[in-house]
Image 1 (spheres, one colour):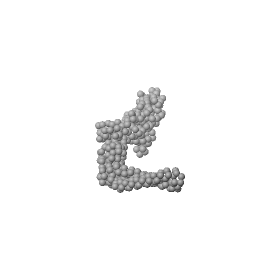
Image 2 (cartoon, one colour):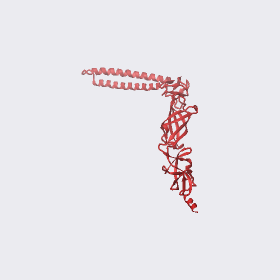
Image 3 (cartoon, helix red, strand yellow):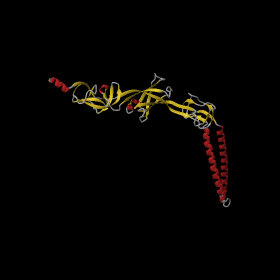
Image 4 (tube, helix red, strand yellow):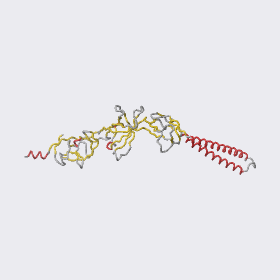
Length: 338
């Protein structure tokens, strides 16, 4: 009878382990989207008809290269008219300046030129000067419109779309762009990283990607920027990587499978998944102190398969039950078995 009372006082034995800190690591695979480094829709700034096409889809171009020429006779006619008006204003200005200079020289002798006559010549010179400057500005401004008749590449890249043919009318604001130009020497990779990993450290600040077109080849992507905000719809943050693409193997618009390895910046607790017990109201582990059970609420972090990262009111060296469950109530006596 005494033996049974002693066993009842000590309680049943349970398997336990000592809690220790560890560096939590997690390798995940996420979908990503490949984007060009630069992408421009090239439109016409002047109305006219396409006279000549120098490029087509797939053409590699350099910065400043002429892509197409626009024929607009009315622009050339108006430009010639403005140039003629500018030359006429220049002639009047030079004539007025010459007349004023001669009067000014003669006025140095007393009584030769009346002051009113000199003042009148000066006013005429100022008026002709203003008219000449206005005509010069108008001609120069319209010359810029004339320069728009040559459609040039804003940067080096490859033509990915052409929406015109020779004879097409261009210059309507509502029309499709003449060309689409992409610079793919560097590919931007965008990945939506789940919220749980956004504060973790990405190992070496790099990821590894493969594409459907090149499933046997791996590319290294370098993390360059983060969105800095969690998308409320997807509960994720957009991270952007850069991938060198000098050979042109990667194509913008493709989808990629990206492998990322995350680590915690500081050591944390990782326990066997069986140690975590769950109910509808809480998630907890069971600590044994002085042979007595105690439930401690925890929050989970990285899921590492058979091990789970946890956070809570825990300390290194705590004795935890290996297989936690709600049937092992709080405050009962047990015998820890390591």
